[in-house]
Image (tube, rainbow, N blue to C red):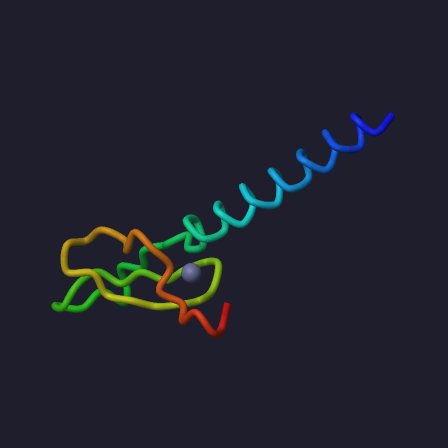
Length: 71
Ligand SMILES: [Zn+2]
């Protein structure tokens, strides 16, 4: 039965790779807080890592702003 083991191993590697890729892209889930809006831009806070930012175009940042070394 070595074939089934090889297939299981490939599946595990594939799951791991897709999981890591998803983590990289979707690290941040931005929430607006209009109470903290400033003239500089709209206030966004990341529900995932707690990073706060202000966006002049009223759109959340497309990527996670958390520093690499703190992930
Ligand atoms: Zn984040």
